[in-house]
Image 1 (tube, one colour):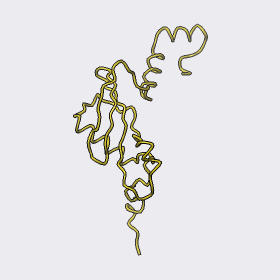
Image 2 (cartoon, rainbow, N blue to C red; image 1 turned 135 degrees about the horizontal axis):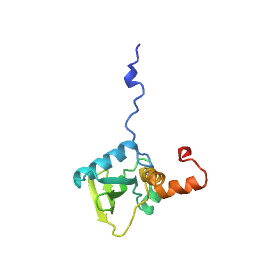
Image 3 (tube, rainbow, N blue to C red; image 1 turned 135 degrees about the vertical axis):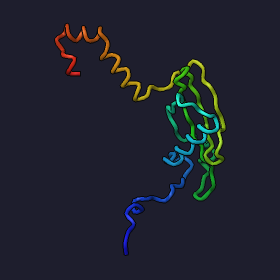
Length: 142
């Protein structure tokens, strides 16, 4: 008997067993695809977070194994072109955007690459480099 090596690490498609189970990688990818296509998102639109949109507590409390339930993703997006922050709910079950709204005057959480850009900007600052020099700290140590 031989084992097909490329297939030996494949896992069956994950199915949710409980309505509060976190979204799987497949569900996240599907939700992102749905919102990208339905809202015709430009490359400047960034996904700050994608998480389970929890069902109502009453449903969760009455849930019994085997009961069907829908899956939704709650997303926060940032439009880098104008700084707009959007909240969206995507029905993974129905394959559609259930809600989409601009949240005016809101800045979403900082993202990892923004930390890196901030650090690079500070290190490149002549004022910062001058302070380090006055203190005897070499910039090469950063």
